[in-house]
Length: 412
Image (cartoon, rainbow, N blue to C red; front, top):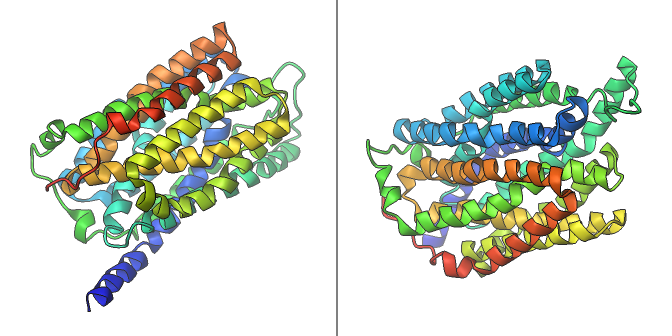
């Protein structure tokens, strides 16, 4: 009887997750266009220097420091988490349209800031909505839903170069000898805006009742300040993202330094995602065997190994194989982290907790990482950057069991 009840809860949770699965697929597809190519666009198409590029990339986390906890607090206080996801997706679409029209350092900087007001909060709030909807669906459920985000990301990375080449051929664009290798790359902002708008439409069908609508009382956010496991987790996350953000955003420039083009960047991401997809699907088994803390440690260690090997390898085929380690990092850091947090933080504060995690990792650590990486790129080169962050990440991952306590379900 008990097994039948548990199975019924699982089936209901998974049925309710269908719009959630589609949202992950579409919205992560839009991210799959911008993330791999944005720094390349800024460097070649917009003609920014390494320092200017660092400032533009730092704008995303700088804005997120303010807006992510704000949107998380609004979501928890109102209980309207699903509707907040819709609002943020619409704002993201408008922000990408602003980027498409921007030209020059200051214009791009302000357009990036406008997009970041909404775009930087979409994923942390979506994670909180996902974990609430899937609360009774078992340890594998989040991985089964989240993997469709990776699939959408993969499909857009594979298809975007074809979209770009078709657009450039129709407009008669050709690579310049001393300019942009892909002169029509700005089309990525239009495609991304369309996908973000479609994701917003899907968001209207997300569940709005039950645990996902749980409200926090005024002042409840202070519970997080007294939660020692949560505070230590934020400290660890700051260090992990500090060492990971800059190298990830500058990855297209790294590929270009090895003589690669936009097709090479696409192929590198294919290698990453082909391995990431089955690993995300298997994350439930990893969670059961290693626990969320173990997933975090393995992910950060392997991420460090990836950057370290990349710094010293020049052969394109070997470099492609090294990028397959990215999947382990995603499962460890981007899934193990939210799963650890969802246990140690009170349920009624899950959106605020996830938003603060993103603020510390993507926001504060991202600012320092992007500025520092842009500076190091100018004075020492890409290889020194990757070697330093690789060593630091590997050492940090080895300390995870000392820094973080074993997770225990928080009260409230």
